[in-house]
Image 1 (cartoon, rainbow, N blue to C red):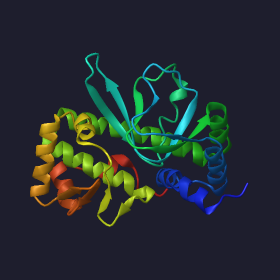
Image 2: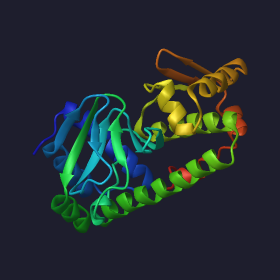
Image 3: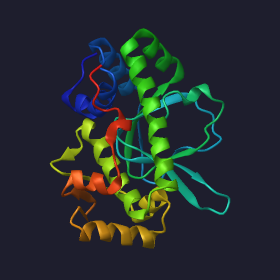
Image 4: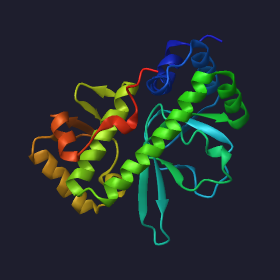
Length: 248
């Protein structure tokens, strides 16, 4: 099966993301590409791909668009517990559990690949580099959740928002979604508030403070970071937990 230029462009974020964690063999890349093409799916903005309590029988790899993991309290209050970006999977090994403990929703229109459990297990059993890459991704997701817990529990509002912007920027970098010092920011203020545990009013005030300090520009669904090192200092941010720059 030969891949067109359009196919390769669509699948590139997944290969870049996994390669940043563990270099893939050529055979692994080809096998994963074919599996993803066979399972291409699309969803509109604001759709739940999976809900808390649902059984899981497949692995979803995001190819374009943004999603979020979230939990909702009985009174409707929502906490976003992580974002999912192009190239990342929606819990690669979640099928090992009985049901999902959280929901995953689209924040924008998305294209994703759905790989059934048997096919996925065959892929990772057939190539060690692919298996290690997906396990590395699961471990990094755990590290991200620990960092988000610190964000909510110990960082003040400005540090929380600055840290989130730094993390988004660094997670988009290895999949080729950074242009200069800018990246897309297609989410709403409500989404950002739900991710940082702030009210929309407090989130807006904090973003204005970052703008006024000259650290960021947030306009027309684009985030521009004028001084990344200064923003990292303000956020107490170190990218080491993302494990994106190892060589093997």
